[in-house]
Image 1 (cartoon, helix red, strand yellow):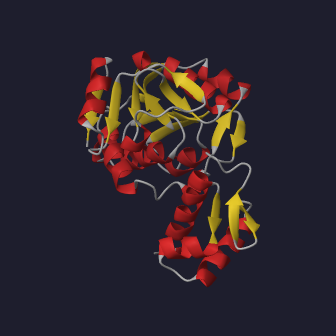
Image 2 (cartoon, rainbow, N blue to C red; image 1 turned 45 degrees about the vertical axis):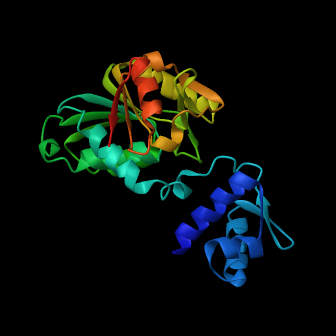
Image 3 (tube, rainbow, N blue to C red; image 1 turned 180 degrees about the vertical axis):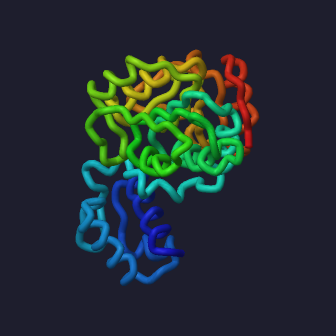
Length: 259
């Protein structure tokens, strides 16, 4: 297991349990206790956890892992979802992309589409995610519009009233929404209320809304509501989504694409 994969796993276990013992973590990850101690020390230096005697406890803000530590989770599923979502977007459309690991993969899938190598523009991409804008800005055939706002370090997203000023002046063909949770009754949600507010406005400016979410997000609830399921046109998820789960979303009026 690589160091990055090990760190991802350690942080996920900490989020789930709140506390980890060195020996316990070493046994679960099948590495030496000395390796885990070094990992804990390095992560503590980055303020991702708090070291204790014999282990570590979750940092006060790490209930939501920063984006760079989420990338490895469900990676293959997210790439398949991203390719399917990219296939729903036509050349010349105006596309809104929220932040997140899955929407970042959507941006990458759009960047390599053969039919989007030229145009005036080939796509207009509106995003509040700094990392997505950075990746797509080198594509001269894409028109990139970045909202204003204050950068949120966990997700690289711009949030706050400065973002509202831009989004209130535009219209989109499609908004691609990354979520922490999507539930039939409670809708799409994020951890942070300011992030949810910007994402909600992005959806409101679009003719259609596509949620890109791996199966672990389905049937879950999170603190800040983005929109109800009635506002979502299409859900793209992976094959681990249960038949009953898919059926419930379809009965709620969503087109569900399983990849």
